Image 1: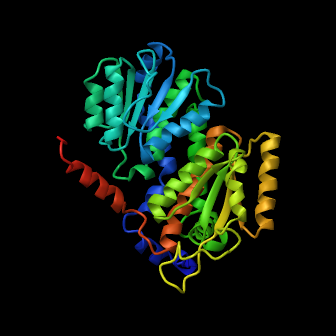
Image 2: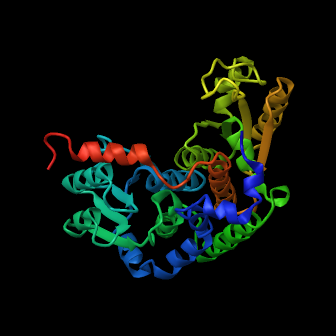
Image 3: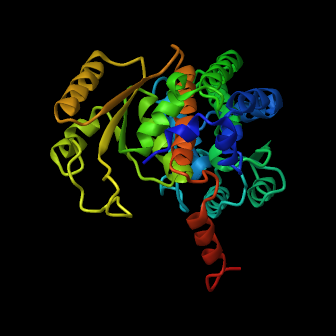
Length: 381
């Protein structure tokens, strides 16, 4: 069971986070302001002046790659230029010299992203690398023709805690091309929203008054099914399940409204719903209670009326089947502000879920083991 008492003991809470993931989570607003201050606007202007690409492909993995999914979601709302989020080694077959590839990597050492960047240069694409100075990806970009490097510094934070360090310059590029509405004023206001949310979710705010601690406890005591509505809810949902995986080391299920209501909704009649017994699937000891679904709906706040009605009805269906429901409403009207409010809250909640389960949120043992074994694999340089 989740340890609620621990979340209200500030000293014990901080001691449970030796890697300072809580501190890193609180840096969202600062990351945005740093990006606004340090991103080279003249470089972006030269890039845009070179011509409008046929398509923009944003490639990256994990905590870095989520930025590509975010800008693609924002572009859907207003862009006449297709924006594609790509995760993997090889670029789609149709990508060519008329396209712009933006490669994202906080460390600059992500092998899939480097491979995609190399392939982009081979095909004659315009290439932008948003990555650490002096990294292998930066070297790839700096050695290529028709390529541009925007350096970033995560200041030692894990990639998943550096979302806005990469996302801010990416959004500024997007704004310059007219694919998303993310000018300096909008991003500065997003930083303020993130700071306000972090103040409400901070370690010294008790559970009774802290939306992130409350949501973290709900995550920790369930199998969360996290569905999003509108333009930003689905990508915020995917971010939330990824954060729960890396921080709390626990599974969660991503879904989108309305698509999830054509398939996933039927699980409310299955063995994981309504507190039904689950044969030891989530149990380490016989005396522990099994996990069951909790539906968490991330409401965009700017939704088509049919989508809003669907969200309301599916919540009623879940409750009727004794599936607990949590609704999280985005704050603000601007699309970037709504996104910032949802991601900031769920980022905090994922760390609190880890600590409530007595799990150190920082280590990523299986990922490190995988990388080490890949590095030792026969045939690698």
